[in-house]
Image (tube, rainbow, N blue to C red; front, side, top):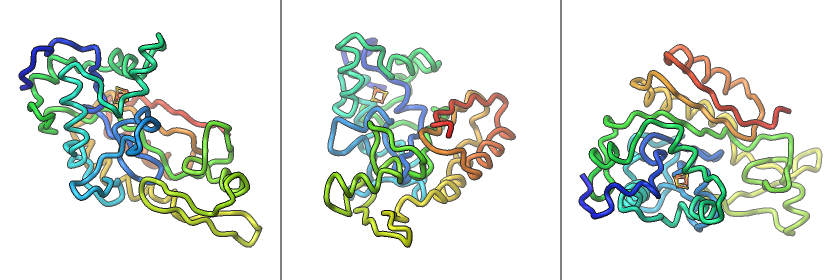
Length: 251
Ligand code: SF4
């Protein structure tokens, strides 16, 4: 239990560090997609040696007690804003409904319950908090190249990226991305293998055995790949109630 004078202050509390797993399209695990733009770390949760937790090789439950995950929870329970949550802080400061506020309204988890079951340093027993929400991105295979997007989220951005930057490589959170020209003269890479969806499926399903309702799979920005439908079918069989929030380009 967190011992602090602001224990009933819920103005910075967000359920996501307790009940969700968020997977970037390179498999790296992050606090949430809103924690993507304001720090150099981009919300990525890491092992002690600095290596990102990645859904293709790491246990998702272990990632929930990464140093950053603990720090974000402890910070919230002190009634403070964590630097990784700067976007939500700014949205609320300017009167915009933040994702934190939306998630706070959407889920049953209260600051009191979180506080009761969370250690002072932010550590949780993962058995105490069901995983209820997954945000999963399956590679960067997309047939649009929206203005606010980029090569990390859409492979059709590659040609414009090279034209705009005059370079054929960039750094993503998992590794340095090297683009090469294919036979059709288009830039490509296999470093966002959409088959990662298959690799991710095993850990995800293993971690949802106890989660029987209100499971939300949020698949953003990408085509309805056959692999995604397979995952949904498996989850549907397991879930009493499956709520699926689908964010897609519908193309
Ligand atoms: S407060 Fe905002 S940035 Fe932080 S975990 Fe919640 S939704 Fe993400």
